[in-house]
Image: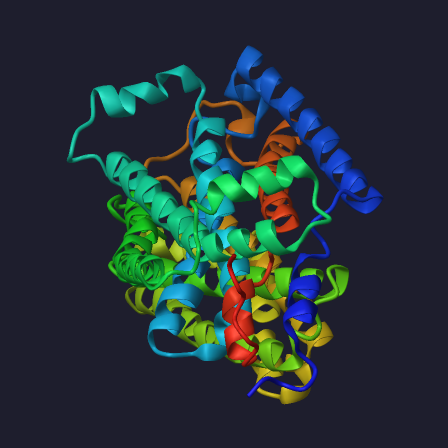
Length: 440
């Protein structure tokens, strides 16, 4: 039986009213575009003058760029966690969240590859990864799994949207003609026939199964870029699950932040309810507890053995020059959020969003702490080098280049969720018990 307050017209109107050009959207896109152009100018300086314009030197050869890369790959895993894992075990409440999660996954996975390019002094040589590919190289593994995961995520975003596009193209007559034409082409002549639904549902289920190993591989392989070395801080056998659990934390926080934005700005409080924020708070608490376990493993085991190189590395993290950032990440981005999320009052929309912002910021700085400090503690003594080679300090140019991928992600997410329904239309109608859409 249909819920009293929901009708076909209400659901269609609520979930499509944002599909229009308005001043707020144009101002936001203008801001993002201008900011991106400034960042691209900074990148042009790096292309012209070399990586020396960044804080990267002989010893710290991976800086903010690689921190960004690890963070972007991590955030992209949320599509698998929400759509595949929670979906396959029968969590019905995730329906309004799947498109948000998949959009975030597509955006971060698409931009992750570009982040690597920003770290290359000769980006035109990227083609050599494919021309002279060697199976023994973890770099090739990384490129392969990122590409595979991106394609699977894009398909998981598109296939459930086919029915929605057909409905909007037929039922929403206020849209511009060009946009309705785009929807008509993308809907692939969908007419809600049993055969079409069978093909779509089977395809989605296959993708949901395939994306789980692909998602686990993408961040496991990324972790191997570090773990296959013998550097203190990277020489670890737990980096695969450690990186994956941290990815779920960052991705869940990103979804909560997106939920709050779209609920408020697109007036979707009837669909993104307090229940969804409460449940996502529970998910964030759960994955944070798992991540806390791996954090303890990361520091307890080398701390117990305390090899000389590990002793230097751990001292700098716990009580040295990286201590302030380290304790902010551990306490402000992990321990306190877990503690707060144990209480229901902190899993309401505003408190959980504030917690998600703190977790997301801490997640980026966690990747910074993984990438940078261990390079500052080489096995061989540092001798006869310029003073500025001793320590890593990001430059303004490097910072602007590192901001560019975030702007690209925001542009991709904004465009997708501005011109397509944020919440699955057909699935929502079915869950509300509303009579089916009639295709003429």
